[in-house]
Amino acid sequence: MITQTAVDSGPALNARHFADPDTRAEKLVYFILAVLGFSFWFFTVVPFASHRETYWWLAMVHSHDFSYAFGVISSTYRPLAQGTTWLAFKILDPNVFPTSVVHQAVLQGCIYGMFVLAWWLMYSAAPLRRIFAVIAFIVGGVFFSGYVHLFHIYGIFYIPVMLTSGALLRLYASNKVDKREVWFGLVAVLLAFWHPFATALFMGFYFGFCLDTFRQRSKAQLVQSLALLLACAFAIGALVVLFPRAPMPLHTRLFGFLVSYRTNEVNLIASAVAFVLTQLVVFTMAISTKLKLAGYLLVSALGAIFLLKGLPLILLWICAVLLKLLLMRRWSLFFLALTAALLPFGGGIGTPMYALFAIIVATYVTPLGLSGVETALSSLRIQYVVGAMIVLTVVMLMVRAGIKVPVITRVAKPLLAEREKTYQLENILAWLHNSDYCSDGIAFAEDAGDPIEGVESAITRKNRPPSWIGDVRLFWNTNLRCGTAAQSESKSNMAVVTFGGLPVADSKAVFKVAGKYTDDAVVWVADTKK
Image (cartoon, rainbow, N blue to C red; front, side, top):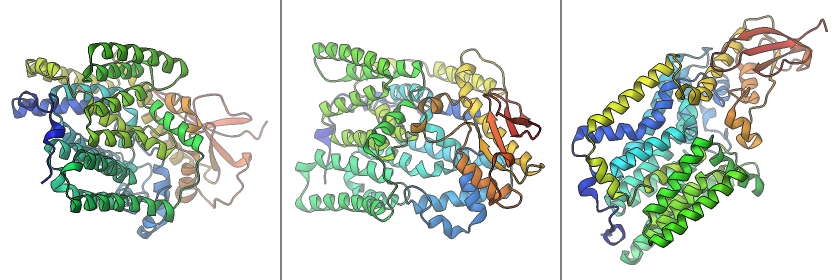
């Protein structure tokens, strides 16, 4: 049997005797605190109406049978995720528009529930659960952008990636990787057909685990390890070779890598939190006081440079976590963190979701070594934690009810505005379908492409449509438009939708949906009198 006794020794993981909350109630309270950061924003605005790729899925499910879900319909062939997502959109029912608020809420809530389950696996694996919960609460609340797929039904694609992250950390903490590695490896191979990110995370972790336990492995076990790694690599490679994506230049991938982190760090508050977390990681490193002082100064200098150059300070935090794991010689966690950090490079389009998994692993690693803080938190009366959570819940309900709460409402406004725009767009499309302009084409005055196509637009989202025009146009032509899509798409029979901004030239406004947190959404058609 392979053990990790030598690898896992040290104060960070041997603090379990005081790290576990004393009672089930306390354990539950700190877990709720751990997920409260991102849950606060989720429950403040859930449910969204149709958002981003939702329109594409609605069009496909409406116009094709179930077998179409297993074709090459996305940038990466993921038949298991495609089939499951297809069924979810069947539940939403593309024949009903505007979409059912109840169905949207249930489906988005199910995705949220799976994310929470993944966090439970991580929380239960954390050696210092109280300080882990505090850091997870802060990180989830500040770096919420990566959770945007909670509001898309096709967030189903990322559920196994989240669960894989949690399960790997849970197995590592329990020292039972060797007892589960074959079964986990086989599942990871299968998950390549759901989302290759899950397989990649397993490969990174398992490669590190093999290094951790290399001297303890027999030749047969080494061959087994190599076979599992090759099986995972072959599964991912086969998908890439048989179903290649459109070629993407290296500089585009590098830019997309930076943008994924930049879209998680949306303001100076987030930059400040990333800076503090980086310094905290330096503090927890097992190095001399002089080296720590040098580390503080280096992080401060690099932080200033990153701010001046517009680079995300989250990258400093991730790099500090990798260095910490390198010094600790925790190869399983090191290669898991490294793989997670590189996922945005593989995606290349800059979506904040791609960076979420690196942020999660960094959240798990950052508290290691803070035994003193954990001890201090153990003396904190749980009633104070519960009281703070109740206050936050009341604040969340007030914001959701439309009551203006100083600071919080202002911070929440971009998210509230984005939710509002999803309903504005659904109402506009429903109105157009029943109007004299039902045969017109549809266009947006502003673009809503991938984040790499407009970083500031993706962050501020001012006047930015809630979906890409190509997806909305496909849904309009397939589900709602009168006549045929082959009709002329000239300006004279085009309905242009704006979400604030300047009026459309030579056009008149024919319909408006007022906004509370965002500008009015307006439909413009050509003014024949001009």
